[in-house]
Length: 463
Image (cartoon, rainbow, N blue to C red; front, side):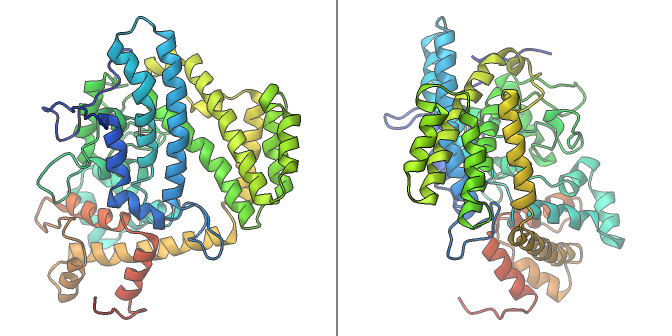
């Protein structure tokens, strides 16, 4: 398998504009433009009303998908800067252009990738993905027959194993009902950094390899990803399968997310009185046991105890721990550079932490599953997701398969014109995708509101 190289792994070429030069203004580079295009998009803005872990806030504000993504982007920018500096210092013989990219532009690429990493997630957190999968797995009768007969196996698995990561790539690259192609028209470098599982649905969901743990692109976007991979020198792992090596930047985006959700979920749980300050201090302070100087345990603990407000104490520990893990991940990335470039690194960067710190991460994970992810409020919104998304899919897909009844015609009118429903023979895959695109793009509140109106539980008002 061909080895990747740092000189080829970045590109300012954009989807939909492959024949044009990206260009750089006096104010923004191509990669800063990526960040701006994402943050000003309606798809990103809708993340403010999509569940992260806990339901949308009442009197206590907790993280949603938008605040989570912004914080991951902040950590990702720091990781990009730290790794970029290390690479430019190591390879002093590089030309000016490549050293400029890694020293000054890589932070923007990683930050943009982090900003977009959850942009394809449906409402109601991960239960939204499960609700979509379960609906298609439970099809019966004529619906199931047409689904199996008219879609290829790879297309079927796009829905049977619906994946928010693959949907993010689609959201960013698909033009939907617009005449111009390329979607957000982001650079190849930014797009490659978000594809955690560079495999199609047919070959994905095989946990024996990290790259096939899930899927990273749907059947409809296979050509787009293949073009990006060829341009950046990302090799296929098998000539006859759509499975590729991971782009090294992916590991940094993933690490930023891994760091944030573990720590931030604890902060939210503390605000909701699910976790005590003593539990957090016990776990978080333990990371500093063997540190020296500014990060020495006794110094960190002294400052911690000088703070009066418990929420401020948690924020202090959160900041200290994130900073510590950024430098740990930077060192791990550089230590495994050869495996990253050969596409053979089998685990996420955070899995290479020293044994004592890995054990602490494991304790955080176990505690989170027991006390956070199975908290009653979390379970309640997951159940709501199953009912709301499953109910809407039943109505809309049913209308799609039987389009000539009066009710079906009315239902299909509710789908935004952005999502094209052709109703033509041979287009069942793209028509179902449009229904799923419509539902996956909804906010939690919009999904509940529309579902209540569709089922007669709420009466529509003239707007």
